[in-house]
Length: 336
Image (cartoon, rainbow, N blue to C red; front, top):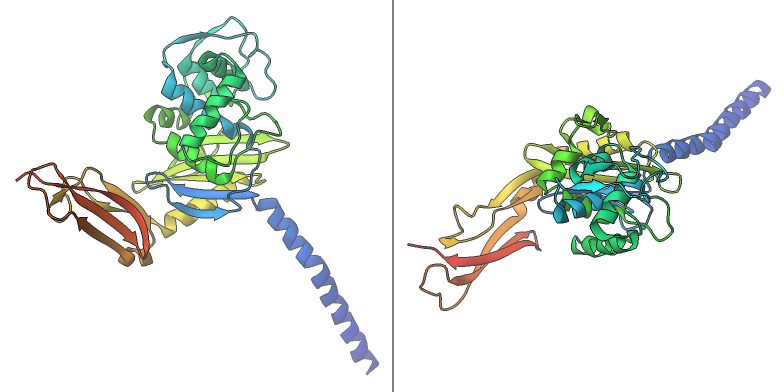
């Protein structure tokens, strides 16, 4: 009996120890791999495929440069020569070691910005674009709002710490999706090595993940490890964002794998074919799971009476996923 009791108490002690220590180990393991915020979006439709804490306002370090780059690409001549200002030389943090008075093209500086994360390139480009960091920040905030990034505040072009400089995973996904629709931006962020300057891209996803085509890493002590990645498979382009994620490459690969496994991009209307005898002006594709495909409904709502002349407005095409309207566009009388 005493021996049985001893065994019982020994087993109980083991179970208590297991209960006390294993949850702590599990929590530590989760803390080591989890992102504070994450988001996955399909680029063409802007459908969010995954979100977790995606509206938390957090610092984003050098992923800021995605917005800097697309603004410069849209507004500046890539072949224009820029003289490095004194204010850019010796900028804190990552650098391509620009020197005041040196001359680079806007294109060179964009490659330095996105491949090597040059904060000095960010300052040079911002001053070239707007004349001051404050003025460029105002442009950043206005342009971000236009892209749908309503929960962000941009105070500089590089992402160095500032209490008023922050974004959300959702906002950053929208900015990156917008940027990835620009041909020059995609060419820059997918480049592994910029031959003219000998710059190698720091983004490991380009070398390790099938279909990776960009976009930007980031790190400061305040922001932690941040990563925005775009990948394309079977015609579907996805953007993933993780903020404050210790294992940012591993977690990003998990998120992208899950999205590519669960969703396919399906064409739902084609302007070359029209709809139900009417002309339409836009193609539209949408990422769907296998179970969602049967929930798509296309409905034409026409005017009464119908116009007679080709090209006249005739109503609307409405596309529903279940009860949710996901897309609409005008219908027109087709030429006969």
